Image (cartoon, rainbow, N blue to C red):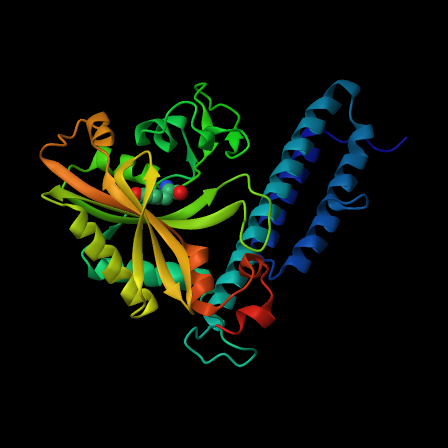
Amino acid sequence: MSATISLQQLTDQLEALEAEAAAAIEAAPGPADLEQLRVDLLGKKGRLSAVLGAMGRLPGDERPQLGQRANVLKEQVQQRLGARLEQLRSAAMAERIARESLDVTAPCRYGPPGHRHPLQATVEEILDIFAGLGYRVAEGPEVESDHYNFTALNIPPHHPARDMQDTFYLAPGPDGSERLLRTHTSPVQIRHLEANPPPVRIVAPGRVFRRDAVDATHSPVFHQVEVLALDEGLDFSHLRGTVTTFLERFFGDLPVRFRASYFPFTEPSAEVDVQWRGRWLEVMGCGMVDPAVLEGLGIDPERWSGFAAGLGVERFCMVRHGIDDIRRLYSSDLRFLEQF
Ligand code: DAH
């Protein structure tokens, strides 16, 4: 039978081991050294195992005490190893960041430079023209309520646009409210007027959604720009002048015609055509804001009047560039995109 050993002696050994380990870990120069230390200290044939090997020589009732002490040591060592590893890693990262630098202004050497998508360029050009006329950009959410998309715009309950065939309805919101994907940018008119008293002049670009089958001229997701001006004394001549000026700036000096039309939120309403390569093309809807819409917002229609217009960005882009199929605008085909 081997010589007895006291609990105190073994505890002292553990303490010495712990102190030694702490110093060695602190001094370890790299992750590989840490791994080696872990094996030497905690591995099967490591220093801790060696001390615990002598546990058998303790009286049985003292063994749990030593076991507990050993567990504390093991945890401490593991925690120190982890902390040191983290320290080494962040020092390495900091060193790397200091060493590497990236010149984002350097000319591109590996491929053609990127550029704006033709649709985006079209939106920006439209907004630019309106900015020049004193309009500010406004935006609204793509997920809308029935109220903003239809009711507040004077669109009656059984209007065909509300049909499930035309509108993407979503599951109700957390508060049980009805939700849908906006079918036009006109709800931004309402949201803007709720938050901003007239006079206002805004343009609101954005995506809109309709349950349309895809073909050369239809896409279930497309882009519109909404225009709204509300002030004292605005009449149809202001609408006509603004729309004509805008179309001239965008398309150049082309014949423009206004055709009487109907929209629930404008009265009177018109559709606007431009003559492009000998054909009349419908490019936008517009009209004088219907007094019923203003009354719904608590705005006095005797004092304030204005006009609104809405246009499809894809249409503008396609006409301008002679693009024959709307799908080309969404295909990300570089052979197409590189032409712009
Ligand atoms: N919201 C209409 C649509 O999507 C377009 C439109 C027509 C907007 C007339 C207007 C307007 O602001 O006055 O078909």
